[in-house]
Length: 493
Image 1 (cartoon, rainbow, N blue to C red):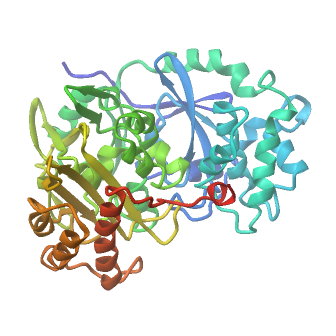
Image 2: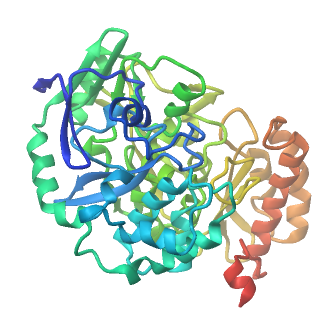
Image 3: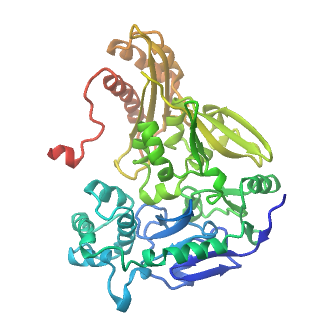
């Protein structure tokens, strides 16, 4: 059945309904707010989702509730906002022009210096305050991973965050007061239609459901599929690429589920990092720890696990981690589906095993069983919110006599695609899990990888780091106490 088509985009901006019959597929929310609505509190800093100066909240209906998330307006496209509530810093003001508790705390505790980044910090802290009125220092710092203060005012900002709740509860908070009304208005906007806006050369589509998405991509096999736009956003802001026609899939409900059946974890392609975090942290803790180091909170609210796979980046964080688990991928074209080993999806740099009109529907990974050792380690210049130089993922099964029964090792950043260390695995399998075995296998890395030098790391550094990650994994699985990260909290303990 063909979905009904609506030729307008509908959403709520602060307290007003918005209907747009014209918007470019590459028009960012940041540009629209500043240029079309004169809302200048949302700033442009990096235009690539790193600095957080453009942070706004986007509310969406989830299971009958309204969930607000901080996002980077500089790489969030207008086409992704259908039936959402966009909240900017201007909406925080209380009656008679009084400051919101988040803003007042920033004033009283000197959290603002030059002031350029302040609206972004305020919006990130606002999102945190709604989720956790009395957050720990860890929660505060995690929520601010995606916000940069060039004046180095972090300590004052953290003091501000600790004090927010002392200014009163949510009784007068605009989003609390409006929640029921906003839910009703968003529900009224959602008529279940496909959205098509624009004409040839400047057109975007929002599918009604996953079957409609399959039909759209069969008819438009060269369309740009946009999930979280944390990668595609940079195609526009940094590379000036034309993405029309763009198909926005972030709202396709069938792609946003997680489940476990028979020991196999299935993650829909549209599940964001933060949506997967709690589920994966419980079932596969190493993946939860990895997600905490992918981008900042805004990127994790937007970016999807399926998008990280589909874009095929050699430094994507999730593919090697899932390959080491023996992950498989379901691809769909029209009504037909096929499932392949995840590692076979990546053919060469920029080339994946995906037919025209085919899209990633879900990824499936066996959860590590009893006695299995699994770890993921990411190397980057900054610990927080940085692109990977190299990432190693390790999956080890030991026999009763202590020999290596099965070993899967996968790396990102070491080749043109995420890649298994097949020669290293062969050198370890059947051998005793000892330091001597590890050292004997180390030369096999030269058979598996020929890394490149770029701005993130030299080839020599990548090779040495990759070898050292195997040594580290051996120490971790041999009873040695190897700290993954010494925070300022554990260091002071």
